Every structure is written in structure tokens, then in C-alpha cells.
Image 1 (cartoon, rainbow, N blue to C red):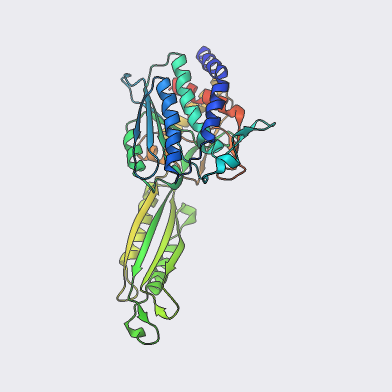
Image 2 (image 1 turned 90 degrees about the vertical axis):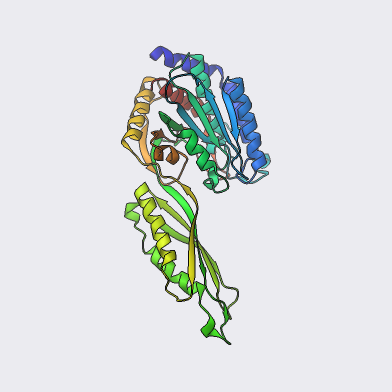
Length: 386
């Protein structure tokens, strides 16, 4: 096996310049989640590179946001596929790529919008496939699945449905989200979502006919206290009533009130508990004559640290030693990713396989250039030995 690892590494070393050039090209395209045209430009570039690598590609429209790009290789293999997950959008506004273009400094750090989260991860995924091709791998089909609106938890599209369908039945998944400087790989992530709770009351003049009014804000106040009282941070359960609007002016009993709720959960059981809590708050009336409606607007599934997830991590850890990458360790984080979809579908996943760096979602975001190559070696070797 050592000989295979050497050959994989030789391929990567021979294509360093190509990998950096693709990385630069991707970073210098503005592809904020709301910029569907920019995300499509990234998609088109990646699709060309996939096609040139003999991957079968398809672009699946997912609504007003950018599409989902799927690239498959070795489909004829009679085994379950291995899935490589990524996203093509960033959090940065239009014009950022011009103001903060891709560049590499004297410390070997790359800079630019999305350089870390996660344009480099897309490069790693594609070149892991190309390295496997170069060493004659043929055991599993390999499927790259790149979403177009991950940064807004697929609230703009039906991408979550598409991803679920494309991922289900896979043997394993690797997600090339941001890598950590201390070589931690993510085996657990909280899930998260957004819900909107709306109360309809009866508006009335507070001086002339207050008895006719039914305060939507008063009713919502009861509901907020009730929901916030359901928090259990020790269990990882969070319901945050973070944004509230209501009323028209101080002299009118408010007829409408709305609160936007963000919630986090470490398990499917707690997810279902939170959804039930929000619905119960909507169903229970404190101020007679008001009514309420709850709607979950978006949800990213949690990535539970299941036995199969930990088993996959142990495989990657062994491979890291064998291929010469070095030590890696497992940990869990609060931030969501599409790895949660895989694990919810029973597909073991390891996340944060992307390039190492710091400063996600900020102008100071940077990535360690050498890790682009070492992480490609780790990914391709881990797939080869599965």
C-alpha cells in the first residue's frame, strides 16, 4: 500500500501549479449565496474540469439560488459510491473578489473571499478523484456533490431535498469544509434551523376603544417566555427568539407580531423536541381572541457522532499515519454543514477535510497553501483504502 501512497503523492506534486491556478480562478469569482449568476459561474468552471477528468456531470436547478453540481466517476463499479461534499457559495458580497483578490503571502498563506470556506475544498475533491484515476483505482464509484446555497442553510432553494437524494445509499462521505489548524477532523456537528412564529391579534385605538383590541405583542410575549424557558444548554438544546417585529404605533393596540427563532440541536431527538415546543407555543393561547401560526423556514440536520462515523474517522486516522500525512484527531463543533444530511441518511461522514486555515467569513480569512496538497493526499488515500 505504501507504493500506492507514494504514487498518489507524486501525482499531486506534479499538479501543484494546476491546483493553485484553479483555486485562484475560483476565489476570484464573486459567488455570495445571493449572487446566483456568480455561483453558476463557479459551477460552470468546475463542471468543465470534471468533464475533462472523464466525470459524468449534471447541473440540477434548485430554485432562485445557485444549482447543485454533481460529478460522477467510475459509475460502472458494482459498489456503493463514496460521496465528496462541498459548496460553491460564499458569504461575501459582490465586489469583494476585486477588493481582496487571491494572493499568496510570504508565510505561505493564501488570501481572498472564500479561499478557506470553501473554494479550496472544491479543488481538493476534484484532484483527489484525479489522483485516484492516476493510480488505477476502481473499487467504488466517486460522486462529487457541490451545493449552491449552503451558507444560507438552503433556505433559498430545495437543494436539501436534492442533496438527500444524491447522498442516500452511499458507502461513506467526506466533506471538504474548512480544515482546522490543529488537524482536528469533525465527527459531530449541531444541527440548526430557523422558524417564524406569527401572532394575529385585533388592532384597536388604545384611547377610543381599547376593549376591542387583542394585543398580538402581549400574546407573543407569553410565547417568548415559554419558548426561552425550554432551553437546556447542557443538553445542547437552544431556542433563541432573536428578532421581533410588531405593532404600528404606540397609540394602537397591536394586531400583528412576529418573531424569528433560531434553534440548535445535537441530535434528531432534540430537533423533534424543539419543533414540538414551537408548535405547542403556537397552539396555546394566553390572550383570548388571538391566534398564532408557526412555520419552520429552514433546517440543517445535525451530524451525530454515530458508531459508523467514528469508525470512518478511525480509518482516516490510520490512513493519515500510513500515507505520511501525520496525526489527526476527532472533535465536534457547533457550526452546521451538509455532513448532517449524510449522517441523517445513515451514511457515515467525516467533515472538515478541507484546507487548513482561520478567519472564516471575515476579510482576514486565510488558508495554508501546503495543506491544499497534503489534504488531497489524505482524501485520496483514505478513499483508496476503504
